Image (cartoon, rainbow, N blue to C red; front, side):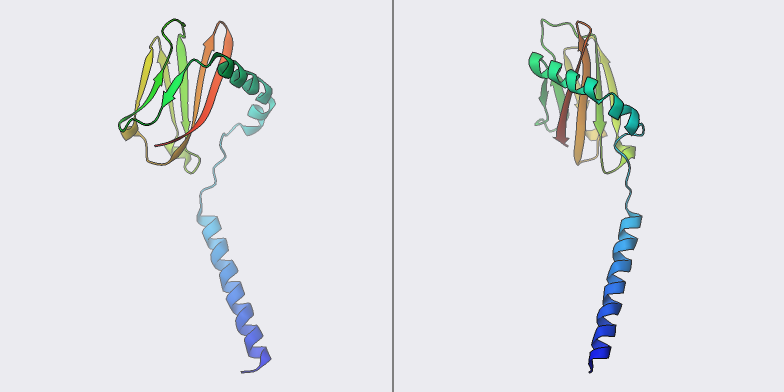
Length: 140
């Protein structure tokens, strides 16, 4: 075998490799985290402030160690009328879930409704007209 055949075989294998990688990349679903990404970027400072508010209050306890439920416990003495929970599955937008709870102290989200994997959990609520946001990764 001479140099020409070796170079041609190497280039051919490299081209097949690039074509396979391109086909794999095209077949993957690449959803954005949010559809209105730019609008959320404008309001990012308010999200940061909401996270600071939640951190300073430290009220909601999140437990994902239960086999059947994702549990959120609200404190007894504080009145939180509405809690919005958003579970984002970054790998597949169709698996995202959104829940709204009102006037409850313990929130149970059944894990059987969710596909196993990593979710991004956002808990939104208000205390004394101050927005609070807890953001955490949860493995189901």
